[in-house]
Every structure is written in structure tokens, then in C-alpha cells.
Image 1 (tube, one colour):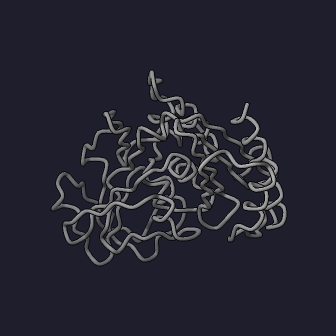
Image 2 (cartoon, rainbow, N blue to C red; image 1 turned 90 degrees about the vertical axis):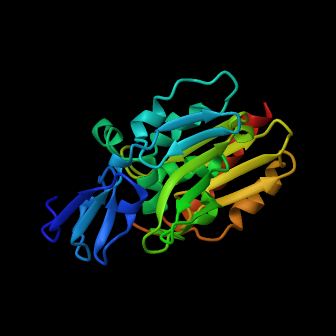
Length: 267
């Protein structure tokens, strides 16, 4: 889509370039930005020229640059210890998009859009992802992605803040994981995305995304029994109704699919 309100476009190459004018907005891949009118914006600041590394592997885990594309993450080579690696591709497939979009859309952009069905939100929540935010006052804050996303299309970014990276800890990447997705249409937007993992110390984490307005995370000291997991999933807040599914349907399928994951992880 042509954005006929945009009269300025500049490339950021240092942190000083990230100071926004009153009607400027950040852009990375732009797959959402150029999908609908941006009537409150007259200028765009391109983050891709910051040259942030896409993927940085370290002793503490994986650091994903905000401008890393979905395609780069999905194609990351397997790591000898990271048994959660399949989630990268699995969660990427929850994004309603062609391979062309995968090659342009960014991990950070998907998380910053903060839509209920954000595929990279699902991934980050599943693996205890931490959002690294550069604040407008030249500072830096870190927060779990499950807290970063506050609602369908809303997050904790203040004006002028920018998501720098998402960090996935080594302990979560070394976990056994499970994944399920359901949609009313074969090629439709996700109605519910469910994830689960069991860490090496026996703790377990289950994530509900797309089915609730904001991420729902259920944590246990050990793998829960079927009744406990079902009850916790059913009582979670935020199930919603839209043309892609009713709240009751989302609640029911979340319980069913989480139980499938639980059984898979218990095997």
C-alpha cells in the first residue's frame, strides 16, 4: 500500500538517529506498516540500517536482534544442546504469511505489533523470552515478553522506545517442547497456539496465545496432571470472540490441545 501521508524517510545508523520527531514512526520489515493507512505518521525511521546481528549464540542462550527476519530465525541451524530448536520453525508457521513475507517481516516487528496471534510472541512466551528495550531517554530496560505484551495490539513501549532484541535463556532452549496450532480455516489466522515445555530440572511451562487477548503462561514445579492443567486453562482470563472463533471454542480447544502436549511431554 502507498502511504500518502509519509513525506520523510530516513535511515538510522546510530542510537542518536533513533530520536523520533512528533509524527515519525519506526519501521523494520514494514509488512504491517505498509498493509494499512498510517494517518498519524508523516515520517519513517528505518531500523534495518542499524546492522544489528540477527542471531547471537552465547553461553547464556540466544539473542535475537529485533530486525532478524522470520526466515532467518526459522532457518537457524540446529544447536547440539538446544532441543527446543523445532519451535523456531513451528511458531513461524503460525504466522499467516507467504515465504515472501517471511523474508521481510522481522521478529521484533511481530512482537511489537503485539497482536493476539503474533507468532513470535508465541515463541518468546514458550521459551521465557526477555525483551530488551532501548528507552527514549537513552536507557535500557528488560522485561519478560509475557509482560511486554499487554493486550491485542498493545504493549509496554513508551513513545520513542525501541525493541532492541529478544533473549532466549539457555535453560529454556535445552527443554523438551511441544506445539499445537488450530484455525477455523486451513489457511486462516491462528485461533489458538499452544506450547509446552519441560525443563531439565522438571519444571514445566505451558503457553496459550492467539486464543487470549494477551499471552497466558501456566507454570508448575513438575508436569501437572490432566485435571489440573485443564482447570487452569479453562479458568484463564482473556478468551475472546471474533470472526475467527468464539471465546468458548477457544477455551475448549486450548484445553484439548494442551492435554495433547502434556501427554507428549510425559511420554
